[in-house]
Length: 327
Image (cartoon, rainbow, N blue to C red; front, top):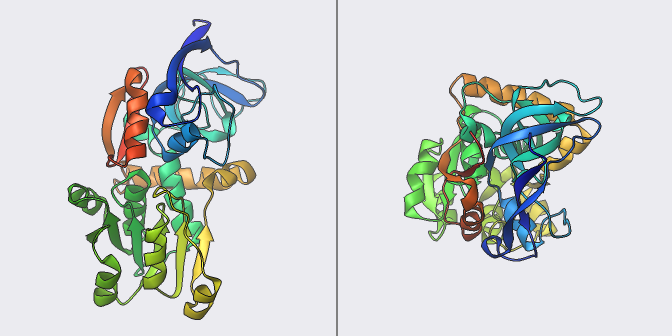
């Protein structure tokens, strides 16, 4: 194995396509409890956009390597690393994986489902774990409930549609363009509205209200959701991809008797990794049953990683965009 590798690094804060540069750096050495992974694929996530802009919850100083989700092969074990062996094909999550090799805590690494290729496997962790924890642990969704999913054709949105349908909910999607409608429907949305439609009025007319809202957008999406969420409804706040932070009115929450629930999935990885392991096992079961399959919209070569992250920033993607690093 060579002592150096190629890695994309954020050199200053700004738009991804302008601030990402390809550098030759040392191959990392796995520390205690870590494993070194030869990276096959990296799924692009919105945190990569926020990391480039300096707007993520974690703000490493440039230059640093983004990328938070991968599929690859274990090539070396750090001291005390358990539950994984050299040669295992795995998926995992950690900031800094948009490179030819990555050192990842063994606790954040899971077996890659045999039924998924490298691009789909790389897309399984963050979006599906986020959707799983949002729908099941935070909202406690029940069969027969109505679920409203914003950005329903995106990576985490398609995951929420699939898992909502698998849970026996009736799924309603909201998407940004007509070209994305069929993607959301294929993921399990029974009805899909365009973001610039009066989707609140349509939902009230056809359903009266919704029970659970899955919102990775924020801004107007949250405000509209608060208008159509029902008695004992739950709005799960996943992110603010729309760029606007909504104002939560405590008086409105009280009078309508609904809940607003935050979801920061990364905290589960830090504070209770056993729950993450349990969720992964359930997701693999659903993959094996054919209920769940990540929607991969595009796979691009390693050299085109900056444009892939920029496309996500610009909101022009459907499903997941995956960077192929090797293999």
